Image (tube, rainbow, N blue to C red; front, side):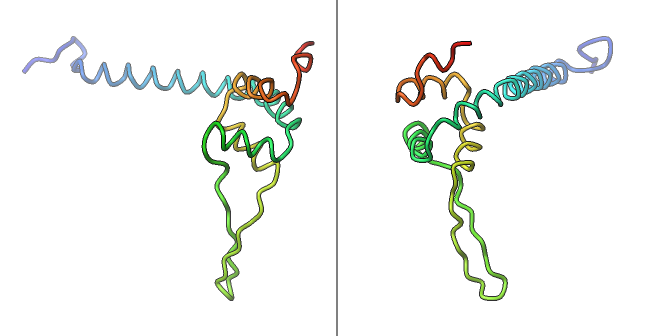
Length: 118
C-alpha cells in the first residue's frame, strides 16, 4: 500500500491534525475572550444582590453553583456549606459571556444603560 502523500502520512492523519489545530485555536480564542471580559463581568456582577444572582442562575440555567459539604472526620457528619454572593459571581463568570450578563442586567433593571457609557 502506498502512502496518500509524499511524507507517508494518510489523509486521516492530516484531517485529525487539522481538526486538533482548529479546536486548539477555538479554545485559545475563547480563553482570550474570557480573560478580556473577566474584570468587566466581575464589576457588573458586583452590582447584583445575592438574590438577583440566584435568580439569574435559576432563570437562565436552571441551576446554581454546586453545593459543597464539610465532613467532620470524627463524627462523619456532613454539613452543607452556605453559598455566598462570591460563589454565585464566580459561577456566572464561568458560564456566561459579558454580553449575556449585560443583557440580563438591563432587562431586569439591575443597572441602566448609563452604567455602560464611558
